Length: 303
Image 1 (cartoon, rainbow, N blue to C red):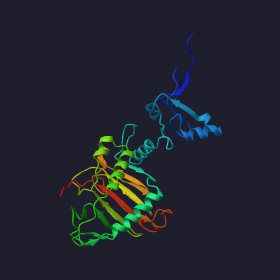
Image 2: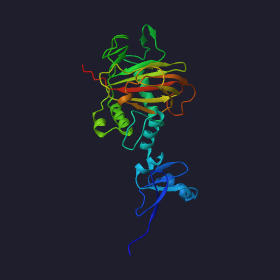
Image 3: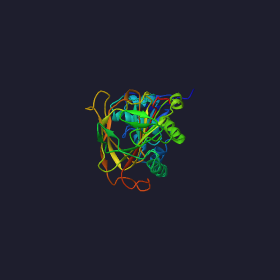
Image 4: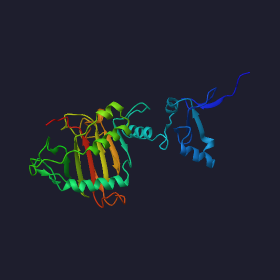
């Protein structure tokens, strides 16, 4: 007689069934979460005894998703972040899909944030100092220093002809590497990551009263993804549609160290900052007050 042992798995309808093969993914019925069989968070909960009664198993990942389970944030971090981004923006999600906009909270460590703030202080001194750009004769409340290419409404130049005529600082190699890592960790394919070579960054400083109206990043010839990094006070970031400044949009909170990447169908989405939240910067980020935001882009320009 052969081995007649059967295993209880959960099907795509959420109901249990007998299977001759073991499941390849585990889950928690109460939380509707699925993850790896060796998930450290699940194993700790099992050791405490409170998890076992709700433990379920799936033949494969697609079955877990079809049954209405979402990825575990402990053992499937990348899947969790892409799932959450899809949920926030009303998109469908699957393990092989990459949402066009992804937020990863706390992506930069405090040490990395503090180091970048030190770089920002150097950039702000020049040769082209930080300044508030003028849009239709009015100064923006946000102050900006540029790397690689100088942005002024609504074009890029090597020299800051609207400030002092000096050439801006070069785009640093370490930031290219950081941008590629950001794409890799938000689900972009290896070929897309390798081709991503940002050549400009707009580095914005927001004080407590600064705002940024809804706009599109469309002065670049390239529609490669935009990589955004936040340091300091949190803000309310409004991310909208590609047609106009009106609804539908999502209001997200961007905190210190957060990464936000948008590309694909969302590359030309309207977006802005409606509020800065004072006194929310974490100790050790290098910034006592205000908010720094770095947006890396590929201009598609040549000298």
